[in-house]
Image (cartoon, rainbow, N blue to C red; front, side, top):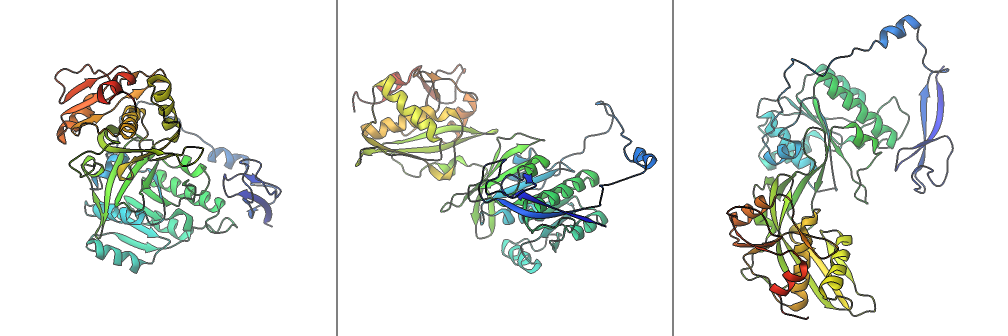
Length: 456
């Protein structure tokens, strides 16, 4: 007879415990243990020794092989292919996560339609929408003629039987949280169900050389819902981001076994779906002809592409005893460090001032090369002195107040010249015939003294 074992699984970290507790012993979260039942034969699985030896026969191979590496599948969405590393690798498993309503289903429907138009057999399986709803969205986007195989199903067994029977090049599962396996007595969308369904789909991808793209939900904290083990199972984890109020969407790779993890793809949401943005620098820059005080243009690098973005700062007298520090699109810890360096090394104090820093366009900057740009924007706002309109800024600031050279300087300068900028403020660069004139500074104090009047 089948023996039922009751265990308690944490919905936050996926830890399994034999007893219920108010706090998960593994991750420390409260009220996350949920009772789940697992079916197992009494005494565990048993097999005859001869049969077991045949099942466990392992074949070893060498690193050297004469087999040709399969070519990547190009979907036709250039920004999506860029983040994947040049296309989707056959037999790979990809997880795409994003906030509700950001456009994950829209993006994947466009990927499916473009890939199917390139003579690839694509299957789109939805557990959240009916087939007619998907057809309606395809009609609005002008993709109704694409030969995509649609299905609406949540049973993992039914989906696996169909995928083993039919040969697909690319399969899209929207979403992994809606699937359920009858082998596990747990609620749909629970940790155990998500983990089991993702594991079966990954094994299918490897065994049948079918690329699988799974959609994952995001929690209110911005993390991918479900246990972290799902992220370890797949070959690539892509995050689809977008600020409410902005039409821009950014596809960012956070894990990729077949490509770089710092690539981004930029899209613009419109009535007919997502439109690729081949030159995102033009979107993240302000449209005004005169540059206001507190504004500076940062020449950054996102993956393999240079991106220019406007950094805005505002300094105002504090109305309370504790000045406020607010930052959007940048690390608040680096802002605190820059303010400390300005006061200790340059004599520019913000002690009784409220400081606001914003990266325009909804882009988030992660590289330390934005230190100099943020510092000059803050001093510009404090002194009410605008920076030159035709210049870009980049450079890392050390705790000693020195301006350090950053990588890919020539690429940043070429992007600035392409968009009409004539000068750059940075550390001295060793580049023959730079595309724009570089004003090199070795210390932050020297840059402030040359660009702004003395004092506040």
